[in-house]
Length: 292
Image (cartoon, rainbow, N blue to C red; front, side, top):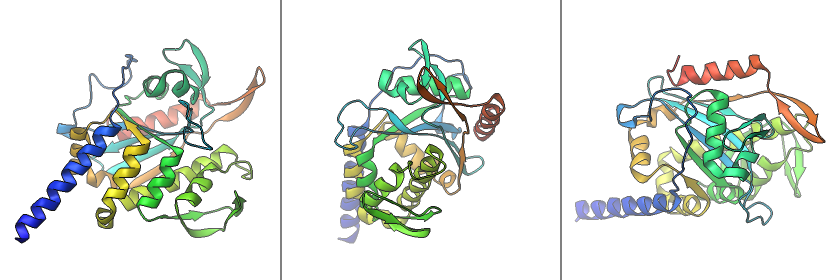
C-alpha cells in the first residue's frame, strides 16, 4: 500500500510538472551570429551552457502588450566548476540589435523581435553562445515569491515605495513586497544599477527556495506561478536533464554587473560600456563556459 501510494504521488508530480512545463514552452528561430562553440550545446554530455533570463514589463501596472525586457541577466552554468555565474546587463546598454539593422537599447530587442532577437543581440555582443532563454512577466515574480513562501534578502538602502517601507538589513518579502523592491530606482543614488542589484538578490532568494527540499510541499503553487507567467525554449526533457545532472552547479551562484556610463543621443539616454569592461565580462563568461 505504501509503495503504491508513493508511486501514485510521484506519478502525479511528474505529470503535473510536465503539463506546466509544456504550457511555458515556446520555440525560437535564431540567426547565426558566429559566437562561441560549434553547434548546439549537448546537455547529455554535461557541457556548460548559458541562459538568458528576462523580466518583461508585461503584467506590470496592468500592461498586456509584448513589453520590453526591463530586467536582463545572462547566467552561465558550469557542472565542471559546480558554479553558476549571473551577470546583469543594464537595460539601456547601447548595442547592435541583430536582425533589426540598428543600434539601440538592449531592452528594445525584445519589443522589436521577442526572445530570439534578444538572444541573437546579446550573443553577438557578449561573444558567447546564448543557448536558452526564460522570460517571466513582472506579475510572475510576485506570484512566484508567494508560491515559495516568501524570500529573505539583505537590503543595503532604506526606502519606501508604493507605501511599503524597506529597512536596511535582512528582511522578509512576500510577493507584493518583492515586486515593489525590484521596481524601485528613482530613490536610489545608483539609479538602475541599484535596481539591478535588488533584482539579482531576489532571483537568488527564489533559486535558494526552489532547490530546497521544502519547495516540494509547495510544488503545485510554484508550477501554477511558472506556467501562467513564464515562456522558455526549454522543453520538459531539457529541464529534466538540467534538474537531474546540473543540480550541483546551482549550489554556488556568483553575481556580477556589466558597468556602463550614461550618455544622451537625440534626446534619449543610453549606457555605453567601455571596451575594457566588455572584454572583462566576455572573458569571465567564456571562462565559465570553458570556451577559452
